[in-house]
View: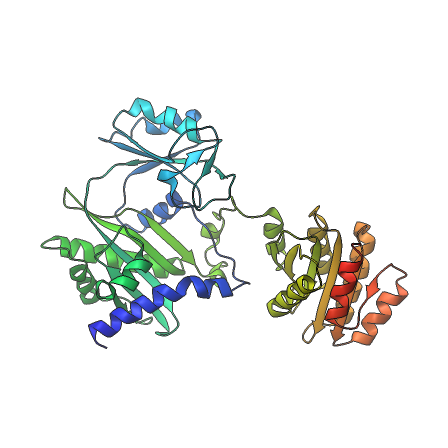
Length: 421
């Protein structure tokens, strides 16, 4: 494949990534804070800035042996734009630089326990619980490097650009010649020749070529070791004292490898995640909160979206997306009802299940059990179709509970809207 063709392919990979992730509704992405990612890099021998982590003045002792020329004090949240953000206490900036170590703790105290608001956070910001204090380095040049699993190549690819420290998607779109993609054999792994090729493309010179190549190889070995689906380094920097350092890192992991990577997944950060979504995750339910008042329990993402559309079409507003999946059990139905009713905005519940893999009788038993267990107070509309639907309808009818049944989705949506008055 020609260099130009590879550049176009790189741009294509970068451009489609957010869209593909948005379609994967059942995926649950492990989120790590910056210092956690850097810790993983350091454990694999990757060159990073020296750092310490503090939760407030009580941790002042961790700085006793941390003597550097200049300190970078960075609030740790899962959002970009921290340097230009502001706190709910009026303090400006989630990233500060100082040469005076005595100023570090006062800066930390102004961050910890306060909400940092940036362009990427909710309106009320995200609470800062930890602050990373790192050695400030003098960067001469910034480059970009990522390793990502790619379907088209049936394995990992290296994506590199000498235009680091920038929005890489914009670089791919505007100057595709500055993006290089190199497929890596999933069997043989990265070769030193490939790492050197990338280092030279990143415009490292002289002895820095070998240093950069060594860093690239270490990053690839980490990629394999931790079952990553992506490691993004932006920037991979050249310093004024001749080092090659991974200054900022973003790691994504294969959810299916959780059983192998228990220590890593135990570090998952849920700071900006709805607690109901976290609870749903524990029971293999997919939940997304919305702003309406009709709770939706469905099986399948497509059916969920169709259900929400028809509720809107009939003048209602869905309160959530809750997909119980294809292998749902009665206890999961109970948990789904508990999650739905924990939202005070929910004034009615619509159950819409098409039993293909799902047994409608299982759903019906789950509905009856859940309604009795939680003492359901809001109106309930149920539409069931498919496997064992007759038995399911009999279960609902003989339960003696006040359940509105519907023959099809349109009728169910109309009834759900009507019960709200």
